[in-house]
Image (cartoon, rainbow, N blue to C red):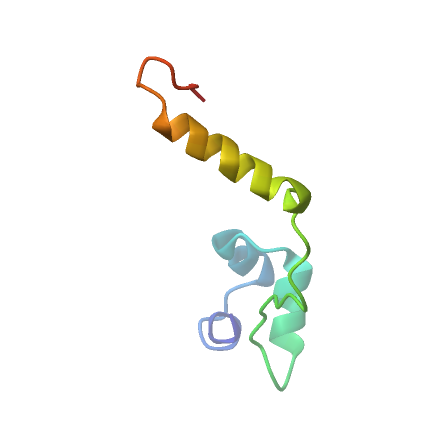
Length: 75
């Protein structure tokens, strides 16, 4: 982004359009002097909503796999 802005003399709007980012994001990266890499890092993995039901679901799937092809549940 910084190269496109400073070297290639492209506008912030055209950079944002080509990279499919918000103009404010491009503007903040262009103006930043130090680190320009942006990454999303999750602090901790949230607990899945299925957590209490995982054992029952595994049991149902195992029972379904044993059935004959005609008797299996279709999804």
